[in-house]
Image (cartoon, rainbow, N blue to C red; front, top):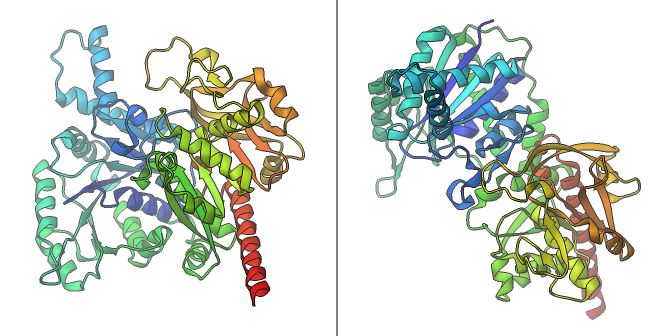
Length: 549
């Protein structure tokens, strides 16, 4: 079977939901027995988002092979339940870097290098790699940005050429657009969609399907109008109203007949009948009434929740597995340093400290770890969240506030977190950390081992600094357990405290491997401990009320 390509473009506004739409359609195809991979084409000139501020681009999503990628790849992996690789995220920076490197080597034999054909050919070459390296039946391709952006033109031109290269019967263009609502008249407007499709057609691409996104119900007459003015079959104009449950999107697309339409237009025969039972149970559980568990997420970039996209989703996955509803209270770690936000920690059933870089807000994170230790509040630390837990414990056992990481204080007398030896002397910031999937041995009898229920696991990393083994024995003597180690025993991967309900922290990022129907074991364990903490708090509150009546 020839590889099929489904291309997603966006119109009217950015952040319209192309990534989730692509991921959901991937799920439709997987339910029909097809192997699916996905690729994000990002038009920025950065080589990858690894050096970009989370405020600029949200979280950096790390793959098994260590590629630092766009957060949409997290959506792809969570919905399709697959592992992607580095060719699944392509940027303008990568394309130009490769073409310029070839020119410098003389590969073009003195020819004049131009956007067409050299840049577009390199784009098409990498699109081909996405299917070959994963042996997928269908490649989902999302073009970042919005139609009309000058940065996206080379990608769109390459995709226009792709339709001719592989055959129209093997390509399908989906245009995801936005229907703005005019409050004064109570109307949804299709004119911006018409203009964005016109812009797309001026490039030489006619969409085969339009996903019309809206916060309001879309009347059939509007779909008829879009069909007529945009020259798209009526059945291929799909209204998609914003849903409170992210994982309901595949079910809504299935109900709208998208799966059957794709089968017909791409000439595919389903290999099995879709079984949505597990997915429907997931959504039904999500909308059901459940006891509430409050998690205080103490971060540095909490103004933009997308900076912690995978953490947020992993918490929701874990909450579903524990039969509770998680309420995330976002706490800026810098606020804790100003004596603000402590009431949120006091009311929390669990405290989560995620990753981050730089010294801003670090003391607030350390104080959050101290609060969790002293108040026996369940705590989960991720990457930097492990390092601040270690720093706080060092200050406790050494009775010195000078204990620190050399990332934040090079002159600290207690450098309990230090730069990895192979990181010393590295000047470049991009792609130079310990990145990707590494093995971790788990200690028998530890909380981590009970959560995973297996002796060896593989997890994704993104960091430069490690626990300083000079202090390992002193920490053990005071009650810290190093429950996860690299196979050679040299690197601390998981640390936890004795005599604490759940104070566990990892050097890796477990959130990247959590799935809606298969929550990460550590997140599930953390949520279970938070659930128990909430139950005990409720019972204590009941006892207080009883004793005062």
